[in-house]
Image (cartoon, rainbow, N blue to C red; front, side, top):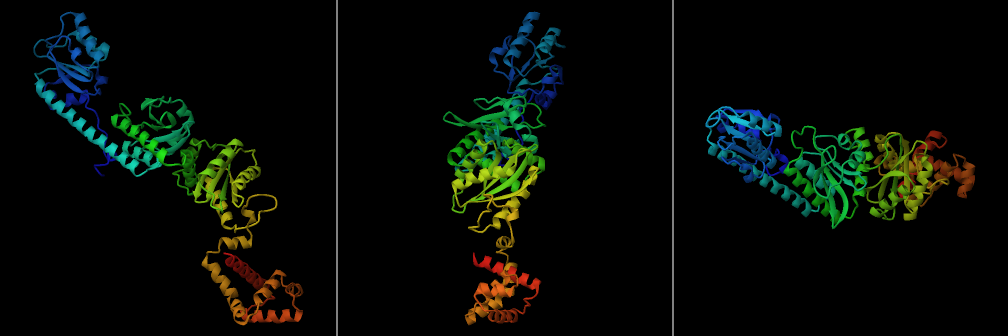
Amino acid sequence: MNDNNPAAQEPIRPLTVADVLALPVVAAGQPQVVTGVPHLDRPVKWVHITELTDPASFLKGGELVFTTGMPLPEDAAGVRRYVDELADVGAAALVIELVRRYHRPPDVLVDACRVRGLPLVTLAKDVNFLEVTQVVHALLLGNQADTMRRTQRIHEAFTALTLRGAGPEDVVRAAAEMSGRTVVLENLVHQALICEPSGSTVEEALTDWEQRSRTTRTADHTAVCGPEGWLTAPVEYQGERWGRVAMLPTCTDDGPAFGPQDITVLERTSMALTVARLIHPTPWERTAHRNALRDLVEQRHRSAEDARTRCAALGLPTDRSRFVATLVDFRTGNGGTEPETRLFHELRTAGIWALVGELTPDRLGILLALRPSQPWHPTVERLCGAVLGLDPQAVVSVGSEVTDLPEAARSFREAARVAEATPPGQPLPPDRSYHELSDIGLRRLLHALREDTRIQEYTERQLGRLIDHDAQHGTDLLTTLRHYLDAAGNKTVAARRGGLSRETMYQRLRTIERLLDRDLESGEQRTELHVALTALDVLRAR
């Protein structure tokens, strides 16, 4: 992987007390941990050599204190005070050399360290404290330099995202890649708008999201919050808060779940999301609905449970619901964000749960989530009223009702077939304001298939010679054939419709049979010609 990519590198682990004790320069002194074994994972920020009776006054916390034991007070109270001061200031551990003053640690020192949870380490052999300092400080400074380089790369990566106008999905994805953790963007009502899982699935990350999120308080700054220990940061601008971004701990975290680099990543994520919100006019909720719908339509979820969990985190009821896919095609170019928003609010005001989002330019997808006892026909009619109020020429196509969310893809496919089979100006059924599968007859089916060259070849093969004859001789035998087929083979009715005598009708039909090499008395062949004539009408209407 590219070493310049912060996501490609393992996080820097801080140097701990146990690490220092394992260094050859310290191990040569035969260190023995007397107290505080559970605390050997404490990070070491510095090494401090002291022979003072009050070394705590020179410490800031995190120091590994080395001493020969010479300055330890004689009295028990003084020893306890010495240990208390080290513990209070946050010293990482106390290392005492048993060479000069002591050959075993005083009991009062051991007891005091055990009470305060301060690791006490003894050295049985002489150790060069100066050499220890040099080795440890070199390691610490190397870690600090590496941390600074990685932090700089994080800043550069987010700056590049901002400069190219990255959207919120790109920002959250980058944060997950850099941290190796799941990152979630939510709005103010605790709906998960964007989830980029890392080391987990969508199902694991978002199950019961709203409930879990509400138990995680919203801090005014980047902080670890809640019972699960999320790292969260608000997303806001000039005092207006839009939501927050959360980084979730992994099940493999040992020790502190988040380090300084994680905090840097999340803070830069928050800043980049603020910029994305300012430069991209589409509200986050609309983008989230669009992505959820497209994932359902294209079946891009890893599993059915992932699909249910993601939609539930957006506020869509997925348990014991029925779903109906609806497509709205704006024939006058009235698509975009405004219809999405207005239709969503119209449905929500009516107490109807739905995902609403643009699937393609001038086409909206709407997935209605209905209660078991809620009929879908009145709901779709209400939706149609709102749609036609926005665009009287809009076409609403409906798929069949499904009972499981992953099956919504089938309902959307059916709605798409209905839309494809609905030519411009197609009258609505007399009892409703939308089109559904049962409306697709032969003419509309052929309209949907009009781009298929097999339909075009069939039409030309069946009728081409007749059309060519009309063009070359100025006749209108095609119209005669149409009257005959419309009359279901009744020559008298066909002659009357064409304003012809029976003898003229018979003569023209014989000519048609000769040109097409067809028997017009055959019901099957009349059906074939009728299909071809209907297809010709559809093809000419393009």
